[in-house]
Length: 251
Image (cartoon, rainbow, N blue to C red; front, side, top):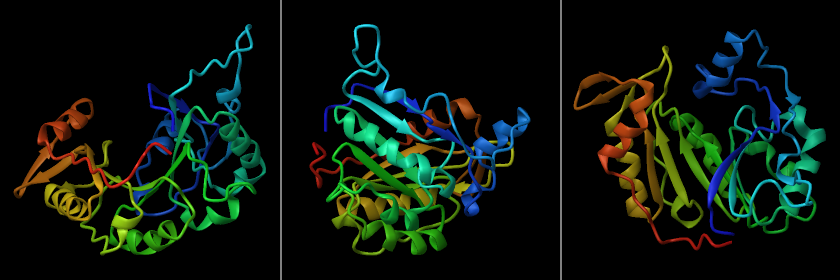
């Protein structure tokens, strides 16, 4: 893949349906409710063709090397988007000089919705699956593991309990990202859960990133209420990120 220079959000469709426990306090539903928008209505957005837009000189507006944070106000594999996804794949194929970062709670729908020329995968597409607790890890890990994806990883956000990944994720998982829940109704994120996941990653040679503490953070039995603007900063101060050299991430 082309080295990443910057990031750009690409919400090509908007709207979703709550899928599991981690969706309970979803920020998309929270923001939409404030604006009188029905989050369950899935629709294409004005940004649908963003990666292939050109300027007057017929140059792409999105520069080469940009990481496209794809479909973060919906789920790329949601059923209502089946009619639009083919065109989305075409844009990703056309813009092989960009990387497309996709997060899903629907790994069971990935295989049937890959493009016909996928083969072993597009090297510029990275797909992560969210697993907020042990129940969802047990459900989604085998599905993610068995897919033909050149780049894949796990996101435990919001982390709602301790998770054991088992022994084989080192052979296919590039990174695990962990984060607590934000918002006024946030549930507890315990530092022991975070550290246990990190220890599994280090033992397996899988990169680990502690993204944010969440609003309600428990450490050594003490509860901390942390403002949204410093949750990422507090996670960085923990100094527990781990970078493995197990995978060649150059596509």
